[in-house]
Length: 89
Image 1 (cartoon, rainbow, N blue to C red):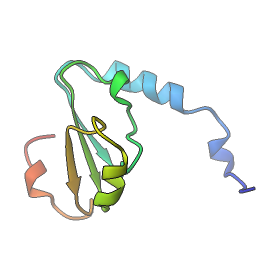
Image 2: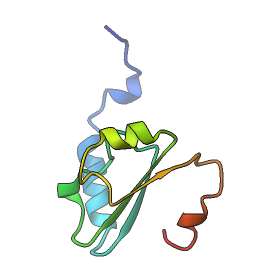
Image 3: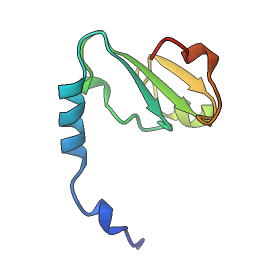
Image 4: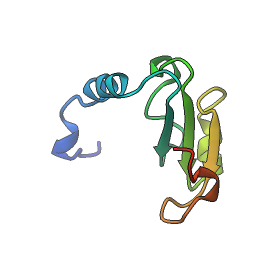
């Protein structure tokens, strides 16, 4: 069994989802950095009209998220400028 860091002992996911609901509105664009196979915000918790963009180093990981997980998938290093994101998020 893996030892977990104490910071993961708290249940953080519900407060995180609550904060996302409070901070986003219809038509929002959400950029999920390092999202991979598990988007931080599940589709059923996103406001109507949200554009959800997943950015990860691995296209294979983004693909594993399955259909409907992302409106856009971008394969890039977040340390580098991503021209297709400029002025969109």
